[in-house]
Image (cartoon, rainbow, N blue to C red; front, side):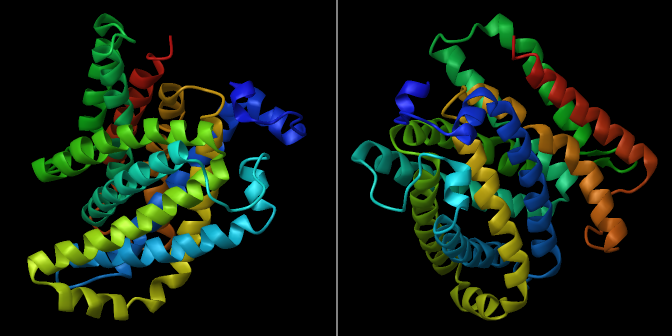
Length: 336
């Protein structure tokens, strides 16, 4: 794919990216696990409301605008070229890339909504396994379009489904995740994420990872704000929405942390899409599933009570880790 990048003489970092996209994805996956855990902390303990869904709307809005500002600022530094050596400065991108950015941004806003909603309800060891199953929809699309054979993907798919169940079940109390949670995370979040991943690769190949991510984030922020306003108005909670926004300054440091991690995590993931397939990207980006349980344990032991609903007994973690391993094993089997 190097010729399609538009880099005639890439430097050492560009050559490293081209030869080692998997390492870019490993770093991106670790950063994703950390900021997802931080998002859970924000929605459990900092941005709260008498109406939980209003808190999600407030974070979707505030996080978007803070993230857009962080994205723009970092693009003025060498960080822009660290993500993609072909990046020069923020400027307009061609119509094909811009259309992909608009669609990916709107999809990203909806995906973020479902992700935040899930993060508010569950702890990271549940959210991360269920929110990283987008690869199943990518593979399903490839089966429908004739790029994959059903017989090649049925067993990996079963392993992922069983693993997702184990990763989100409370072995002492029964089902830890509700049907609503399965619909929010496993279906809606992942099916639109799969579409966004495919669109993102098209946009990156038509421009560069840094520029595309800036425009994608701009449209995500605009779409997320509109969604928050419209949904709040329809639910009759517009006043509460603005009141919640007014009470969120204390969340700014935590949001800044998340958005810096998002810039590098999402940026490196996008850069890797210049050199490898979406399916391979999705496979490596399941690493956060493995990290979800230990990160939840670490946060709860550092700041007791952060995820008060997270089961902490050895049997809970054994079952969850076993489920995470099955998910990783199933998705790894797709890499024939």
